[in-house]
Image 1 (cartoon, rainbow, N blue to C red):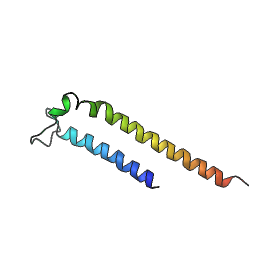
Image 2: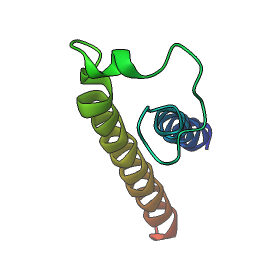
Image 3: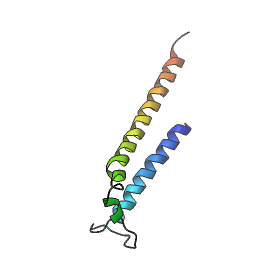
Image 4: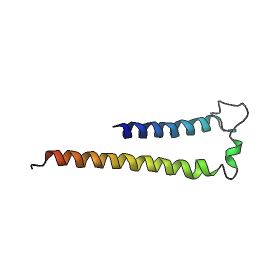
Length: 84
């Protein structure tokens, strides 16, 4: 159970980071945060690796963890149901 909650927390952290990045990106119609420093640094190497490669990989890892937790739960439930 704790692993599932930690996974949800990590996913929410990624979603909030993406949301804050979009709300502070210059030139977007929904820019809310205009104070310096903006997100201009995230468009240069090596920082561009974070939103373009690492965030999608982390989302996929969270999805894989959810799938693995569901599979383990089903295996435990099936083991409890089978007669000895």
